[in-house]
Picture 1 (cartoon, helix red, strand yellow):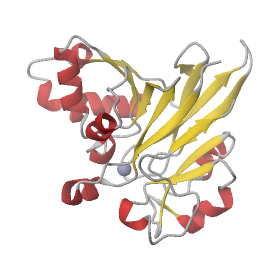
Picture 2 (picture 1 turned 30 degrees about the horizontal axis):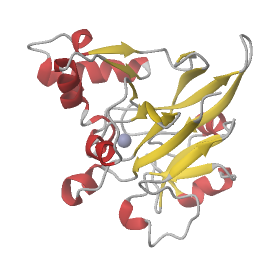
Picture 3 (picture 1 turned 180 degrees about the vertical axis):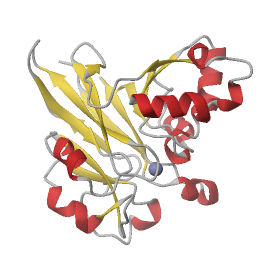
Picture 4 (picture 1 turned 45 degrees about the vertical axis):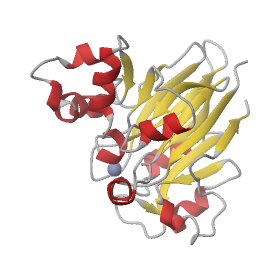
Length: 242
Ligand SMILES: [Zn+2]
């Protein structure tokens, strides 16, 4: 069986990149130590990926159209396309529509969106194939912009799949989404020290955490001040046991 791992690229928001240069919240799933699937492409992600010696993988999951989750998409799609590589962008249908219409608007005088990428846009909660033995389904969260978390399922056989990796993406505490993410063997929650309607607080997320649960989105400045073992940090590698 392939070895899977998660490499954390960034844990910050857009302002922390623009004003201080920290990488936006993002991680990459590695298969046999090679890039398999990138999760979100906000500001700073491409450079962070290169710093670890990796290229942009063919598969990119985009959770929503905020700059700190999709800001580098227009440039990356155009550069990769010019090199003859068409990336595959996985996002829930409502998010995909926003990305194609708004995020890459700067290209639309010259290109139609399907020339720049292959857009894989399942309906909410529809499970689709990600690789030969992994599938993915998107679940809506509670955020200021239309945003979907997801679950990556390990397919045991034709009829059974097991929730392996879950990510809330940007979301307040939202029971419907959390019920999906808590089922996963590895769960990643968006949370920060002081939450609000659009981002859960550490206190709210705490009851949902187990051994293989993690927190992202808390911002790099907070890493030293918040004493919480679940907080992810850039460069952290999580080996996925299956
Ligand atoms: Zn957001």
